[in-house]
Image 1 (cartoon, each protein chain N blue to C red):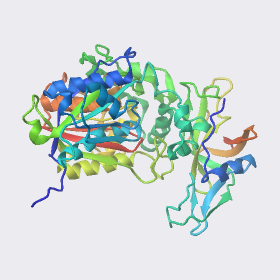
Image 2 (cartoon, rainbow over the protein chains, first blue to last red; image 1 turned 120 degrees about the vertical axis):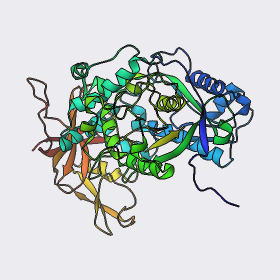
Image 3 (cartoon, each protein chain N blue to C red; image 1 turned 90 degrees about the horizontal axis):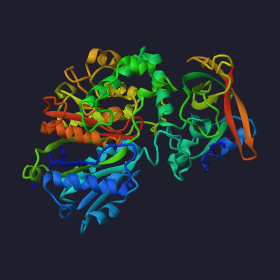
Length: 390
Length: 134
């Protein structure tokens, strides 16, 4: 009996679903997730009775059993959660892919839903993060009491050092915001539909955590996204063109912390390098095979640093790489064609995975001829990534 | 209101130190390596046997942030926060309390600037290390 030792190509994303993206959904986080799961199942022609697995983020407030109850899912054979904020996004799909590849489950839905603008705003200083009773809370004792406790400030510390080492400027970071907002401008589902910005708008936006301007920071959003994962074989019999999971990886680096990996000689995001190397190894592909990518963009500087960690350019070369519209549609590597989390919505990276699926299907509002799409999850945290293929 | 640190068995010595106006750095009693943040097992040699040294209290700015929005509990904004490379070789986050111009409100700090630690006694239970220009 031959046993496949590779996850590559074994599973696919067959269905995607979402709620509207807003600043005040007017309904519970559980309801948002349930709506998104229903949409994702309907998208590929499955029903709740077909689902036997659910995965989500450790941070999600709606338990798998609560979602299953609301949907009338009779039995769950697999349920799993991934830690570390937005770093979980692609790993929820990795968990699902491993489950269906091994036969542990047949239909696994990954979901994430929250009222992240109208209820618990992630952009604020989080006392809950500072007081959690676990090693993450103990780790935060070295930053929060000193006054460092918002996501923007933790990223700004990395951004300042990156500028110092490589001569990057705020305008280089702004190129990401301009690209995202250009793509969002043509996406009717984006919060910033019809509202592109210029680099001058970016430069004129108020300072939040110097060197980060307001327009370097993603939105806070209400909404939910769900993704249906089945075997690649089964996906071919369902309603939509499958987005085959060519690679799915997690990564954590040496001396890793959550948002504050400041104690390494070289700070940066080596955990994304771990993800990248594993994605290339599993898929047999290289950065040159990627006509586009969805790179997690809660804050613009980390998009530049990801381009370097993933091998699209050398260390310190991202400012040149993103110049002159290179990361906009029509450029050499369009990024975040849905508008990203700055332009479409911040659904903790899950809306970016959905856009990767739309690009494989050919249904994106900003289509790129893309046989393969790289998608990454949260930066500055233990993270994850996917390569989706036609 | 000051944000209070979570304190555990592995970090109590640090906060006991600040109460005595000492900036303590964990040291491995087996291999001698210094370590911050502290933890129970030496990543270099695996030993659990640990002690501490008292830092000289001087260091160099490795990076910094001027935090303007949103609010931080117990702080009047803006504040300047820095990553400080201590002369002993470990790195810490701290607020730099004298790096804002009274006249313009602009930050007067740069990477490479020398800083010296001070201590902000919040109450009987908590003293926070803070930093000033050396």
